[in-house]
Image 1 (cartoon, rainbow, N blue to C red):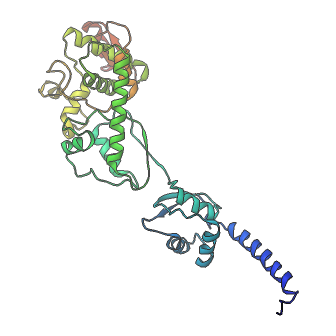
Image 2: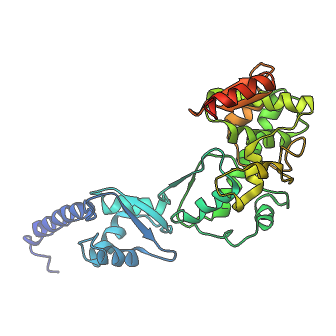
Image 3: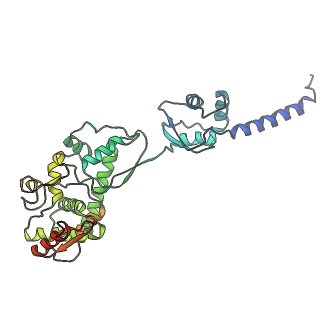
Length: 330
């Protein structure tokens, strides 16, 4: 039996060492990205298809056979997950593979300010990039059923907050999160505070929505809540302009006239006693807390000073003087 020439043994060793160093360099390959970049991995994609996508976009310089070899030697058997991924400048190809296999998709933020109406929420959702629209053609009743399971109006039942989502999530998912968050907030406050003679959490939510729309500053919020609670206790009408404006809907052109205040309607708190039939906006947690922990005082009136703050009065005579001073310039 003739053995292999002895000189082939060191050559084989050298080949193994060179292969090792080549694979080591291969594992250090980086994507050709100079700034944070969003890469979309489509459903049903694999490493080869993704590689073709990256090469076409100029984000990968290596040939596909090297990409396949890199994944075979250093990658895992886990499938890649569809989604939108943010890649940092100089990211290693292997690190990107790990990212898309773990499903660490890019998270977007969507913020809803305190005091927005349901209509404003829907406009915000329609404009959100990457959010899948499933509710944009629903009526308000259909939307309420989809979110809550009932046909009760959804206005007021969405907690203003910043919500996170990934590309492909639905707008309905955001609304359900906001609804559950408001329920949780209401339940907590209702269980841990005096109810201030309010009949139920819905009444709390409705009054808080009025306080939210009336408040020009955080400092006055608890005083405004006290004014409305005092008026309700005395059987006085709330006489809140924002309720009238809400009732006018799209007919309101920004100029509230006396005829609007005297024209009866379910949301006109000048012509009808008690709370309106539904909230008039989606109040924040601070407005809810203000209603349950109002400032101490016997005020029955308030008027804006023009700087975001309010002047509070105990009686109509003092209130009229404040109106003349701050709104009529007398």
